[in-house]
Length: 236
Ligand code: SAH
Image 1 (tube, rainbow, N blue to C red):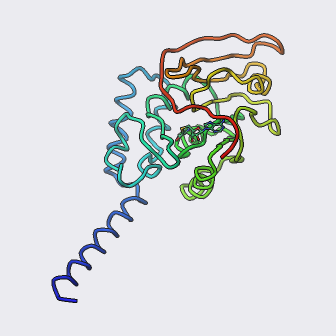
Image 2 (image 1 turned 90 degrees about the vertical axis):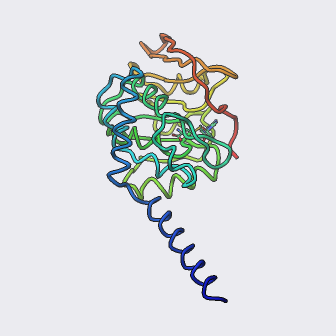
Image 3 (image 1 turned 60 degrees about the vertical axis):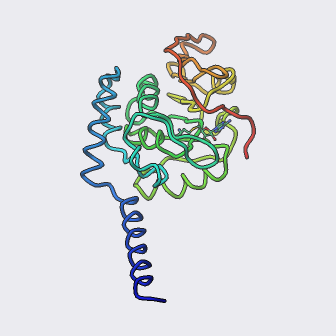
């Protein structure tokens, strides 16, 4: 191989190494970008300081493909593996705010995806169970979350339409995919006083909060339109 070619190869190795280390790091640059994202979310109406604090801590860029690194702290959804998306930070913040949970609460998430929403919930000190129907994403999250020090009680490979009976009832259930209807098992698995936050609809979803008032009584409130990838039945 000629000298110039060798130099090119060495240069390429350096560039690749640079991006590999950047991908695993959380630098002060990323922290600065996160602070700006937090300000944007505040301007967009997120009020809960604990939620904003959690968004300010979770290194979102590490949950995304390195090719989208520069977009990690813009308020947008982005593709992850298996044709799914990491939710827009505003949506994550809004759903978390609506869940209205406190430290120690038992929470069930449907749609682990990249694990970003899970990490935000864990920053708030909840005991988290999270279900994912795509095996590739489930495995990835299972490997990745502990590397960042995030320890859910359990990640489950399964169908969120069924909820997760084993650890019910929950103080909060958060669905991060667009549901065509409200699955009955999720209502049954709510504690009295607990809340289900679920985007309901086909192409566009209405953010819906169901609060369980008693064994039989549920009240419903709606919080505007959002767009999610669809909640699909069965696991894959
Ligand atoms: N909370 C995720 C959002 C991922 S997008 C994050 O922060 O990145 C929604 C996720 O819901 C996808 O990963 C999709 O595979 C998953 N999903 C869709 N239907 C599901 C179901 N019935 N049960 C469990 N997960 C489901």
